[in-house]
Length: 596
Image (cartoon, rainbow, N blue to C red; front, side, top):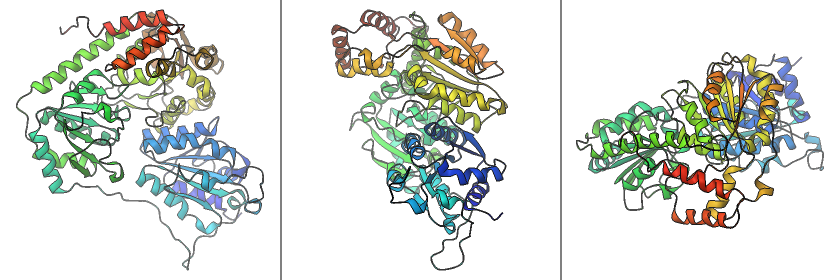
């Protein structure tokens, strides 16, 4: 049989080193699926339960592997379903390529079944490169460019192929007019900073007396030199959510997360500094950065299109983070006055003590912070952690103390519900020899996490380390939105929108042959984590948490507190338990600590 366009497409992916494609079948890609059969499932087709989950799994795979994630779906509804996961990739700057089917060429324009204008539909989410293949000679260039653009722009791209084109005999582009040849592989440059910019940056940092560093996901590969720079400057390091694993939380001058879900030491670091160095971060919430005019600021980022747009920076350096910091280090003068650093370290030490004290506050039945705290004390050094959007993200940001080898991520900018479990699956295919841990709210589990447990059941025996732990925050409430309504809008809980039907997540997991435990007593948490971390299969922890434990920002404003009080006065059904838990939780910040 002659080689088809679909055969050539899979062959080209193999040449690029692609080993996994996440997707769901449909007749719009039947020709591609047939080619997969002829290729002995190489690259391996990973079947999700829904195309959106396939896209999330590709995003998780890309985030945790450093490779391009590939997903595929059929025409019409399948292509539409990919969109949310692709927007997650776009907003978090993750390289993903979507390969989608399209109605046969002969039916286009005839209002045929599943005919959707995919070129227009994908124009925003994959605008950096979205191309429809209509003739065989467009390959392999289209695949090569889709991968290269995804890598270079750190974004999603899309290749749309008419269903009949997949089955055409492949004809390579010739050495002729209007033919486009192509080639495999890319040697990416090290983007070096300008020498004069480094000298200017060093002068600003040397003049500063209270230096703060904001280290985002773009600084992850520069961990060692970043810590050296911070040590020489006597600086503290705060981290946006996507940079939580950029530097470990066990370093005494790392203040933790910043923003609405952030820590008090990070807030104090920014409010009190006189100099700010931003490295590899596009953190958008300027209200959590120093007051305008308070701090001289420098930003280092490899992407010039996202630099100088979050704070009135004095100097913007487009360069690779590690290269820039290595060039900067010899020009920095060591701060001899360590009082600023000592204040930072004291604040950090007190914060972690406060987090432990808050986690131990009694709740009905389980304090959600205790769930995270108990893992934090026994977290494997090679763990990969994902958290869903919602209240799980609060405790992920504040309670988990990452050690040096731990990786973690969530839907940082899109903040969409549902990626927790598929991220964990993507992580397991990226690193089948490492444990993966997912924190998901019960709303996210009901939305799609339960279905993806079936995907876990389908594949877990292929992983050399079978541990994938899904901890469900079971409170029968869409808790994050409930708290946002109270704090931001002064509105009481609206039960018709917020209350969830009760589901036995452990029983569902057990029915799939997974390990499962129901936890209704905080004393069970430690034993449950130990068992899950030693299990010979994936585990679901169905943890009945108290929805009245407030995710109080350490820097909550008076207006937010007033709005919440008004919501309670208006008749919130949980008002008395909220008041009790809120007072007990907040009080931990003011009680005596070990260092007091």
